[in-house]
Image (cartoon, rainbow, N blue to C red; front, side, top):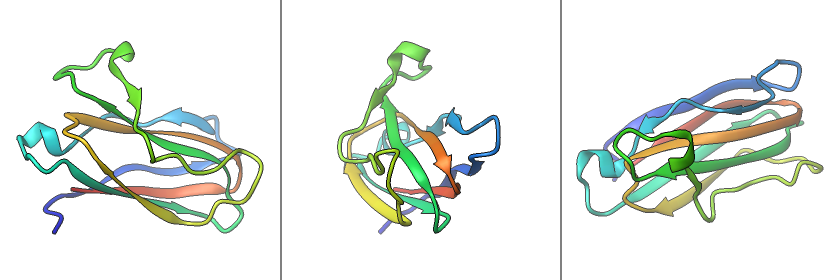
Length: 115
C-alpha cells in the first residue's frame, strides 16, 4: 500500500513554452530508506494528448544534470499517436525522480507519483 502520494508535474500544454519540459525533482522511495522500491506513476492526459512522457531517476543525494537516467518501462507515447491516461509501475531505490514531457497536441493535466 502506498504511503506517499505527490504531484510530480501539472498542466503542461502544447501552446505553452513548457511544451518540452523536465519537472523539478521529487523525493522517491529511496530518499526515505524504504527497501521495496515500488513506485506507481499516473500520467493524466487530455483526450487529445499526443507526445511523450517518461520518468527519470537519480541515485545522487544532490543530483547534477548528468546524474539523471531514464527509468525503464515508464515511457508512454511516440509523439505521433494519441496517448490515453495511464499508469506505470516501476521498482528501484531511487533517491529522486522527475518527469520528462514533450507535448505535440493536447495537454498533460497531472503526473501523480505514489510509493
